[in-house]
Image (cartoon, rainbow over all chains, first blue to last red):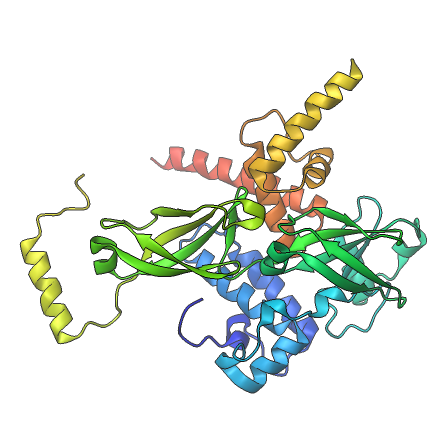
Length: 289
Length: 86
């Protein structure tokens, strides 16, 4: 995440008193516009990350409340990844619209989630519930960290039934988990993560380095699913160099730290002088290899 | 014989699933919806794209397939357009 303070409401272009529905609509509209698969502009990906991060927080009533109260420090004092959040609570049929974005229940068959969304949030109502009431499939949304850790979780259905579910560590997007005793299959859906992205089976994260660190080499901290690790950036690393952290991905896959060289926006006098000196001395021409 | 074909298909599904970082069931679902021909090169990338679109845009499976196909079509048209403009 960028170090600077990001106003999540501004990122989504909604007022501070926006309803969940407004927030969802704004996110969907912006996501359609800036999704890197749709928009090839170089800046689109960063914008999309910004939008996703904002939505991730504002759609969750707990996180939103904290954010409203604490601003950019909303994360402090709380290990968000380990807190059982709304994702464990399922609700079937038409629930109260407030805050149940995370909750998606899908009935067997090739149904689309969006249909159910409409069922939940108005629009066409529970048409689908008449179809094959048994053999439910529900979507369990998980953070990447929770998926990596796995473990036992309590799942509450809308009708009040509760189940203990064992989530296998390293569970994948789309993987099914059967609920013992319940006629229910949980389909894992991994939330987009603000720091990690998938590349095939492996994970990638950006590691920001200063130009001199990239040139001279450095040891830097890289976020991992279980906290962080120190990684040696070899001298002479250009942007895009992929440093492998073996086994640090999801379920034993690898994590790659991708070098991203960041230049200070403003140089001090001394820095400018040193860069000037370097520019005058160096014979390096990146455009001629 | 049909059993053999099924096994072969499943092997391909698993490979594709690994390539796309997806669950084989999800791959099978997209294939049933006609997103890709599993034998085609580049099928893994298309599957991954469909999965991303579905996850990030809140669209359904068939919507994601349509979006993918339209995006591919736009790519193709833009390539052709560039050729004409040169």
